[in-house]
Structure formats: structure tokens, C-alpha cells
Image (cartoon, rainbow, N blue to C red; front, side):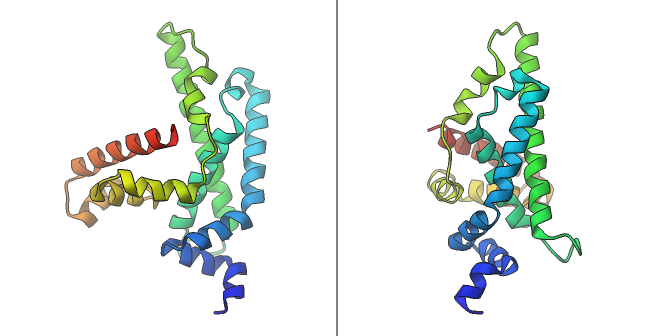
Length: 196
């Protein structure tokens, strides 16, 4: 396949991105950037109109970061053979939307816990650390290679691909508890990296 064909063929780009081609992932990100931006904008304005206090918790950078991670996961988990007739665009849109809904529910739960515990901090303060910077996902993932142990990196990669801990444990030949512990450590390290 010619290089120019590869740049315009989503299926070829997805295969290349799954194989670790950063340029292919960046091309997909540009190709579907409008969809991601529209989802972020729509979600942010919907939340702000439904619950102004909750809307303040979500900066555009925070939502874009969540959408970017969901898009990466969509690229890694998309299988056209398992869902015939479902295009990658639709699949990615659903993944991004579901990730933002999950983020909203998580923040709402955190807010309720703070209120129930007598805390006076608002949702915006509780989430301020996570919204400090817009992260380039490709560079961000490269940086994680420097901070994760080999096991943590394999477990985190499996998590991003949508594999369940039991399947990951079987694939890596370790116990499920080991996978859970490695995933916990990896998430903590990645969260710390995103807050820098």
C-alpha cells in the first residue's frame, strides 16, 4: 500500500496504530479530531446546563484528556469482524461518550462523599489537579515507559486494550492479584505523571 493511501485509510491506520505506529495514531487523532471536539463540547455544555456545580468541575482540558484516552482505547480494541456493520467512527464516538459519562459519575460520587463527610470543597476544587494541562496522548504514553516496571507496563497496556484482569493474568502467567496490584501501581504512577 502506498504511503498516501495509508494516510487516508482508517482501517490501515488502525492496524498500524495497534502495531505501535505513533504516526498512524496521530493521523487517526487528526482524522477524528472533529468528532472528539464535538463530543467534548456537547458533553461539557450538557453537564453545565443540567448541573452548574458539576459543570464547573470539568475544564475543557480535563474532558479532552479523558476523550483522548478513550479514543486510544477505541483504537486498540476496535475489531471490525466482531461487530459487522459498526464503523470505527461510531465505535470511537460511543467509547468517548461512555468514558465522559463514567468520568461525570465518578466526580459526582466524589462530590457526594465530600458533602457527606462535611467537606466544604466543591467539585471544581477536588478535580483541579487533574485539569491543569492538556496532554498529548502519544507523548504521554511514551513517558509512561520510563516510570512503569515491565510488568506494570504490560498490565497497563492490557487494561488500555480492554482486557479483563483475569485474562491478563492468564496471558502473563501471573496471579490475578498480581495483575490488580500492578494495575493499581501503574494507575497511580500515570496519574502522578499527568499531574506534573
